[in-house]
Image (cartoon, rainbow, N blue to C red; front, side, top):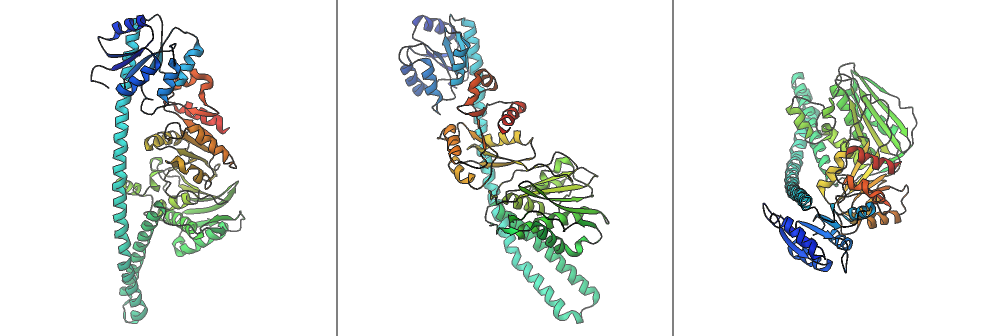
Length: 524
């Protein structure tokens, strides 16, 4: 704003009488600049950048509608609130102005006190908007710094852990050599110590491997060696790999079933299954039940691993898949995983274009549900969207998740949309902050819904949406445009203005119900 107490107002009207009335009403409280035609108004806006514009509609040369359209199409002036001055009272005239981006109307003849009150209100909202924008920018800057620090931390951890492998291999090798060549000279108790030391070394080596693999998956540096696979054979191999670990547990798995072959990395998927079963063994009591089920559901093969262990409270369902969520849980004297195994599972399944969910309640056991596409659907391996299931049974498979692609250059705007989408835990969220890479991404994934930002790119959202249509994707994704320029009230008043061309719009400030109403209509 131009100062702490006053705001700069540009008054645009071709009638001197109107200007005199408004000057008398407003000049004691606000700084006023005057223009008597549209061209002059545009020049003053470029020079002074006013806080609010009172704009007459009917003027010689370019009218108020055209002035408004030009200002709203310019990024540097788009956020300046515009209040139309008009003698027109038809609702369609008001709707036209609101659709162009005006925030209010004042009808002639003017009521000076009413004009002043509305100007105060809109300037107050403008101040709040500027403060929020500054706060958002600061948060985004802080977020970038945090991400940079996290990257440096991860690089340091990766380097240290990588360097640990060599001494671990040396310890393991020497212990194995002692057992192989000197076991006749060793007492039984000494042999047991060496065997326990070997087991501990192998466990530590497994942790190192998991941490390195998680780091590689997050950075997209762990390529998947996909091939045509039989999931039953992969699961059977995972069970055999666990060997004696399953002793003392009632393990149930029917390997005689038949499900479609699929494209996947068999080694990675075997590790995913092994990790989750091993985790179930860790937290299932002696003689507890662990069940492994495989099912085919439309485009997906589903893996369900269920146990009758102590269960996981709902507040930890998201955090168990996070790399440092386990650290926080252990600080709270809670432990639901043996380490980074579940983090690896989440990243590995995401890298295959699938989803992993947990359903659990304390005292009622836990189910992990993994869905993998039967056909090859490669995606960005750095996806970290967490998903949880809505029900607590876990035994019955749910519908395959809806895949939503959010295209927005602003991380904060993306997070706002994701917070609404989080209410639908069966949806898989993919983020893209560079619209220029959209066509390339859409050739690699199957998206059910694409949410475009109306103002995040130099290319208009409608053109981006049209380019998606021209790709002739099958199945064709639904497209919605999110807008920070339209309020829910303006959205309703606009009628057909709720469509940006042929694409539906999600207005700013939408409630959760409004948000899902728009999405449900287009998906249906």
